[in-house]
Length: 193
Image (cartoon, rainbow, N blue to C red; front, side, top):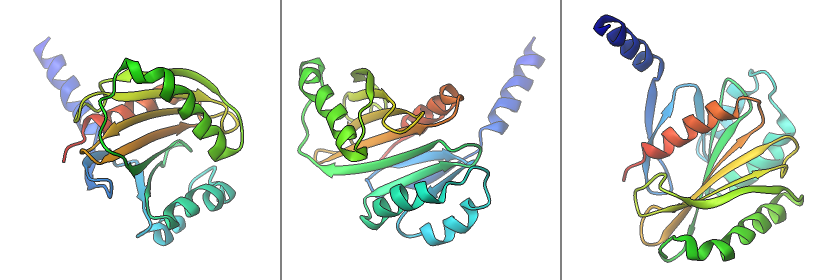
């Protein structure tokens, strides 16, 4: 039994290779090797790499990624195995304690903000308090469907310090959202200053 357990741990740990990166939003985190980090500093180089992937949508890239990168406040993590992606955005916002009392106010605002951003209405599946990533108190977790055709979004809003509120969003287009969400949460759990 010990041999089986040892083999399992070795196989599992070797398949989860990650690299650490320092975000422009004030944290460090580990990202799996099958993700490509795209920022305003490297998007010209990365577009040549991404064009080689199956299902590369140049229209999505031009309409969504490029405007965010030119604002220089968005970082994207693109999964090379599918079209799911993660993005990080931060805003200067004085720290407030995140608790259940603010949910009735914030949950409708989160849904409206997404609707305004994509000019389309979606369904809010969940909006609650979470301990992910857990660095500075609680976070808000929101899950939506349909803001983009066939896409589910998983979003965490949390503070990295007393002035920066980060929005971390997984946009999942594939039927494999469960695995992508687990990877997303692992990335968030690996955050440190």
